[in-house]
Length: 166
Image 1 (cartoon, rainbow, N blue to C red):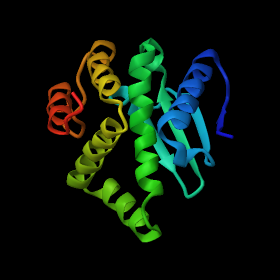
Image 2: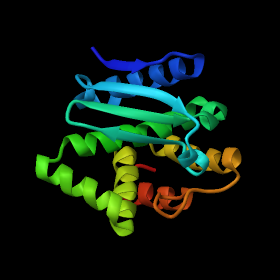
Image 3: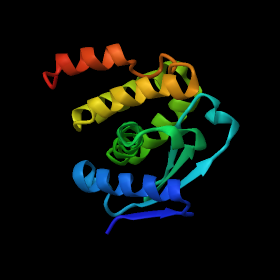
C-alpha cells in the first residue's frame, strides 16, 4: 500500500493520484514509504515548482500553488523528477546520504550535478517527454526558464538521443 498523506484540497488530491500512479508504475522501491504532499506559497517558489525533503522512511513533497496551472503531463514530469530524488537518496548508504545532503546544501557545483543526475534518472525511468514538457510549461507559467542546474529542453533531447530512447 502506498501512503501519500496530504491535507486534501482538489489540487493536492490530483497530485496525490499522480504520485501514486508513478510509484506503482516506475518507482516500486518507494511503495513502503510515507510521502507527505502539500501546497505552499513559500518565497522559495518564486523560481521553483516543487521541492522534496526526505528521511530514511519518509519524504515530504512541497508543491508551489503556481503549478495548479500545469497540465497533467507537466505534473507527471515534475513528480517523476521529485520521486527520482527520493529514489537516489534511498539507494545510498547512510554516510553517502549525509555527505550528499551536506554537499547539496553547501556546494553549487554539487547541487547542479545532483539536479542534472536526477533529471537523467527520471529520463531513464521513461519520463523524458513529461520532463521536457514540464520545462516548456515552466517558462509559460512562470515567465522564465529554470536555471542551469537542470537539464533544459535541448539538453533533454540530446541526452535521450545519446541513450537511444528518442
